[in-house]
Every structure is written in C-alpha cells, then in structure tokens.
Length: 138
Image (cartoon, rainbow, N blue to C red; front, side, top):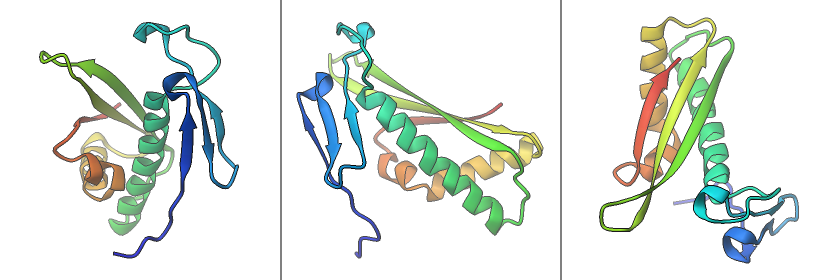
C-alpha cells in the first residue's frame, strides 16, 4: 500500500478542546453540543467534521462515477447528516444519511450514480459494515 496523501491533526481537550493540523492550515475550536449535555458554543464537533469530510468525499466520488459513465451531472450536491446514537447496550454509534440533490439528472440515473459512488468513495469503503449509511435522492 502506498499513501497518496497523509495528514495529521492533534486534538487537545476532547469535545471541548481544539483541533490543529500539523501544517497549521486547519485550526478549529471544538464545542460540546447542548444536545449532548454541553454548553454549545462557537466551535464545531466531531460529527460535523465527519459529515463535512464524508459529504465532500462522496460528492467527489459521485462526480468521478458520472464522468466514467459519461453522465452529464450538471448542478449536484450532497448533504451528509451524521447522527450520534445510543444503542440498547448503552454504547454509542454513528449513522449517516447521504442526500443527493440533482438539477439535471433523472431520479433513476441519480440513484444509480449514488450507488456507484458509494462503492468507490473511501469514506463509504471505510465505514462499510460498521456504520449504517442511507442513500437518498431529493
């Protein structure tokens, strides 16, 4: 295996701390959401960061498969909703909904593109069998 890109982010203070990338390009204050018993605040949280990363990666995969299938994608976007859930055993787990919005693609084609993107997106591949991911088309 040969890494094409690697990045490092250090976090101090957990969910109410600060995340900083090794190159200094990413510095983000973290805040515990009120829904999780925290004070809220100006910072982001791990679920928002995961949603942003997954959404960006998935849309890139979607555009890749559209090019490979010679489908003109036009205006398209992915909205990633990440949920932090509590299981019956008291443990926590994530689930994700990826909503594709397409201006110029029929729903059947859009669904096929979403499925194809899900098979090549590195986030989808990493979470396969570990996180419930629901694909939807608006």
